[in-house]
Image (cartoon, rainbow over all chains, first blue to last red; front, side):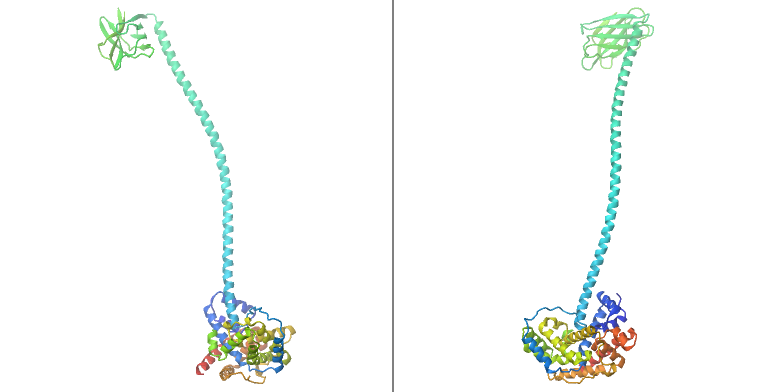
Length: 300
Length: 194
């Protein structure tokens, strides 16, 4: 509370112990707020009041008052040590008032602090409750999303499995179709009107091997089926030759399966006229223009 | 504060000494303090109550209290004389309230109606001091003196004093403040001179 000049009037009256009513409440609140000016004024006024007591001229009481007092002292019960400090009107009471005022102010400040803390806590609690509600809502949403996700994952897994199965089926279908096409092709070749058949016998390099070649002179096609031919040595390959009029014509290279079989659809060879000889030699990988290696199969 | 007051009160250390003896249960100390201060207590009671039987009763009660509860007085908070003044004033005002009587105070224009009779124990320095205080009070403008006397010596509250004087509350407060300020100035001047 800001000090004002009127507070000095209140201090003077208060020091005499005469301040009452609203003025007293107001001034004590002012003191409680801590006012060095008013405290000094109170001390000065209290010192004056202390002196003022002397303005009363003493009037000696009649002697009977003293004798009654002393008689009472003589016949008294053990002395009471009860000593409540009655707040006095000035000098002493000012200090008490100041101390109490300070205490009251301290308590007010503490109370105000607690009120604020309480309000803060309530606000925080409200926010926490709001947040908790929000968290609950988010949890529910998350659970729903997780459920959907799990369902989706299950669907995806099922779909993937289905897809894999389809791919497998498709691959098998393709393979089957390829085989079917080959079979149809082979069948068409084998059942064609001008088909020539050549049996090949194993030569010294592979005595147990044998093969059969189907030739379609019209289209220059040659289909070779090989049996019991060992795989070629490392770095080597089998090369097929169509020999026409003593001239070997390269018809391509091929490998064999582990069981010694091979089916080879040779590159087209033009003009199968007259006697045809078919032979297989062992050649460097990649093949060569003219045969160089040992012959493993041959037939006319 | 108490130290500065003691400096101007020659008897104060003796009061303290007697109080210590009284606290130890020495009735002679009570007797000595009674001899020293009963004049003030009695005079104040007479001034406030106006009836000698009641003033005698109050006087005995006040010293009985000092005997039975000496710790009620705290020397660190002021002189014994002032404490006795306050206790006496408080008792008298209680008595007045109980009996719903008006305080039989002297009218402001007729102060000091009682017989002046200095007690034998009063030393020269105290008598001088008393004279200074009365001079200072007497030198105040009448309306300030009345306000201070009513509020202090007669124990009226400032609102009661305003009614008694027929003046606004603010006027009474202002007069008290000015009166106290002047008393302070003159008492300090006299103190320096003495």
